[in-house]
Image 1 (cartoon, rainbow, N blue to C red):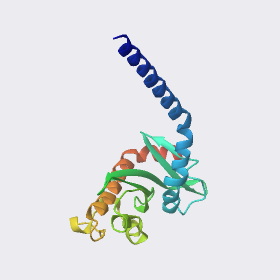
Image 2 (image 1 turned 90 degrees about the vertical axis):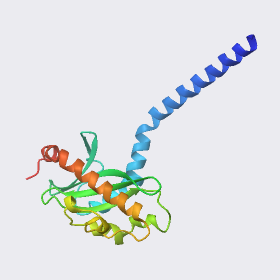
Image 3 (image 1 turned 60 degrees about the horizontal axis):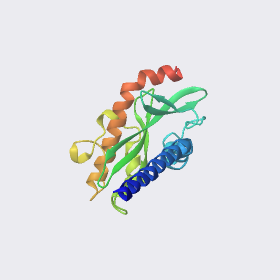
Image 4 (image 1 turned 180 degrees about the horizontal axis):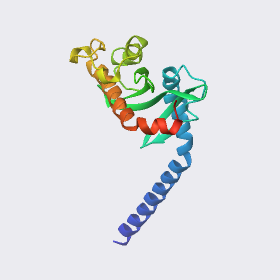
Length: 189
């Protein structure tokens, strides 16, 4: 009995020490992980979506109602913003960076940030032949052609195409909800 209690006590100490180590490791690397995601995951999609700007949207990002908003400025004035939304695809969530023109309320573009779709099929959602369809579209009417919308899905990748469109629709809902705060934050004219 004494050996069992000793083993339980040692095992508990090892588990507590490991847990404390993992928590401290996560806390100490949080900023570095966020910077790596901004640089290598969100950054390329973001910079392609917000190409017409003269500022650094990553450095000037802000969190509004738990949504990270990336502003694109030209001559000191806000012209567009981008935010990221997720929706389920065929084999996991699809992350989409969606850009909005704040004056015309149209899409300036989309970029895929994360996806685990089938290589060579569903992964084609990241190709310009698919993503370019979203440019200058009214986000309120974006949907797949098979569902009565104006976006041609990728043949054989219905879930991936639908997941991307659903993420764009979620981003639009977020944009509509926080647009007044976005305009107030960056003072458009």
